[in-house]
Length: 167
Image: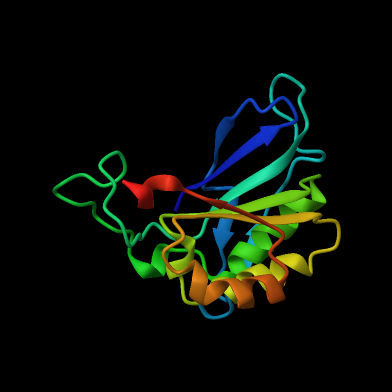
């Protein structure tokens, strides 16, 4: 299993770093309880140029309800097996570790995050993390009218709506 984190420091320069899969392990209990264990972590989260990162983007699904040309090839894509995807508990645990490393903003992305059945629960649990100032989301907006009240109640603070739905 491989994990990536993509962060943007205050300079808005984006970096993507591959986390060594040997660092993050699913323990035997993880398959049942979703425990994610770290052997080490960076305090504070700093890149090789000495910039501190406070913004984390988490893709919570690779599925989408649109087929945008730039994102979805005509032949489709092979989806990751469900057993290899992070559970909602693992997403919140991972975010908690990043918050302890100085992250103050988490943005949920996808695919389309609003098609994940437990998205409201993920938002609610992220909003409970001490030290996390902002929970945001990027969506295509198709399911937004139906889900916005529950997302707002769960604590979602910022929302970007992609304009792909206008094409």
